[in-house]
Length: 333
Image 1 (cartoon, rainbow, N blue to C red):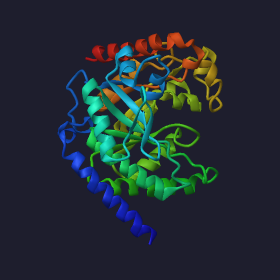
Image 2: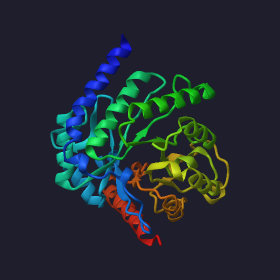
Image 3: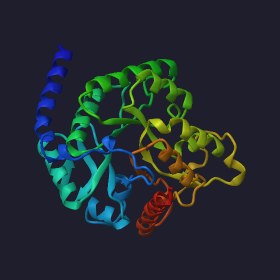
């Protein structure tokens, strides 16, 4: 009975979104379908909506203009709301076709794009609800030309049973791909926390799911945060570059004596997190790795060091990060 209801809801949702997909947004070519440039990639410079919200601007679009980015990663709650897309008394959502149209019209009006939806999933606590949520978000992504969805594969109920969680994660990944097999939306599992920062776990997960649509949201700093030595990062980036469909660009500036050590997970992160133009990670080298692997997504700023700076400096820091990334793209040969 429960499965029947779930099936009916999904079919109803697919039908309602179909009319939206038929509209002009469907005719826009998504980044997931675009061909990589022969030399300099045309990646979108983007920023997390949570970072943009810290700026003293009237709305999310003026915040994007202030730091000169064209894209934004948008957090989506289980009810479809987008809490960090702020604009006076207006609230944005992807919960239904009316709200999707409102958001789409706003994006076109301001000539901005969503490069990824960001979901904070709890798959091993509420599996059916989360899989349904992901499928619904994927259909909204198609309607809005969003190429990627960031997923959270973090053990909660199974946090002390990694082998069991891996099996569960593979099965869940396969379900997600099956539920969205009529789309080209890609799913990026972020490397964060104590599980998906392990290359051995990611290898088994991606092999087990077996779909190029099920890949990685590459958080550039999280492998370093986890404790991997600085020199090891570039091996990890190179190995998983073919799976990357979305990014979180951030960095850490550890003391020289700590950079090449295997550190404790999360060691002094609050103290040493920093803007990407000051950190230890060589973004020029990273960008070259992604370009070599025909990456076609975004470079999305996720600055977790802003709380260390006065609010009046946030705009200039984010703008400098965006300019730094644009300059790197121009230097690619």
